[in-house]
Length: 311
Image 1 (cartoon, helix red, strand yellow):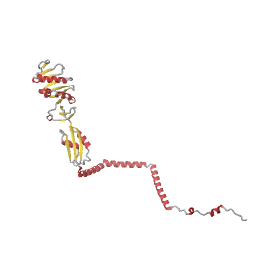
Image 2: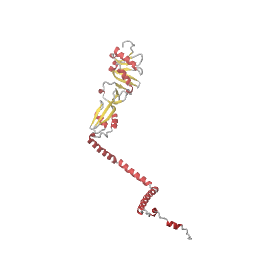
Image 3: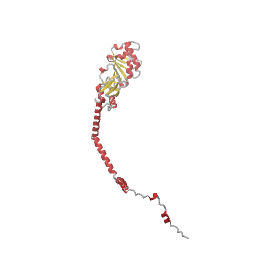
Image 4: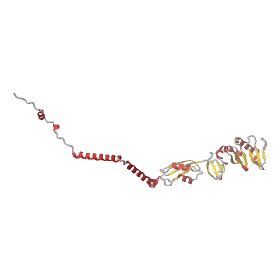
């Protein structure tokens, strides 16, 4: 009888068939690549860490100083005009190129200006011959045109390739206003337009007195509606800012009331046409009273004709 010895685990493990996959030798990673990558990672990490330590150690003051120096340098460049000169030089070069290409301003077309001189318009436009039509600031040119005395409105347009069109709307003269500084042309609103020669506006009514233009429109219209009165009025005088006097041919003064003067114009029309008062030696007609009127003769005598009787 054979005795059977129990095999030890180590011996059984040794008799097993070796695994092919486990039998393959393991390749060790390349030491060269690993070492290079670690060195690069370490250098980057060390650089970032050094920057952090440098910034945390109070170096923001250096950054601020550098920024201030840079700002001072830029300010000196602009203050000294170097940047402006460089920009202007570039702009001139670009304008030259554009002009050579046929887009330089060669003409300005004007319309609507009767009393505004062409030279004044061209001066206000501020555009130079040969200037690029693309860089011409038409809005600024329009603003300068509106500052001219006679210009009420204006339109400035580019007309490609090389022309500028200007359309002017001028103010309408309404009356002449005599002041201590000179004779002014005024609008209907009372706004003074400019100093003018009366010979250029013989058809306009003449206003006298302080603040006369502001309140003259209604009176001018009413006088124009009375043919006989309108044909003989030389001037309209504002008195104390309250009422009007009419100065007729022969320096005959007609005093109108503060209120109800439109009705008194009807009376004056009747006296001129039907009574022929201006053929008499009269220097003044007082119409300030509603129901009565007075004549002042040139010798100073005052008369009060009865209504309905001949003057």
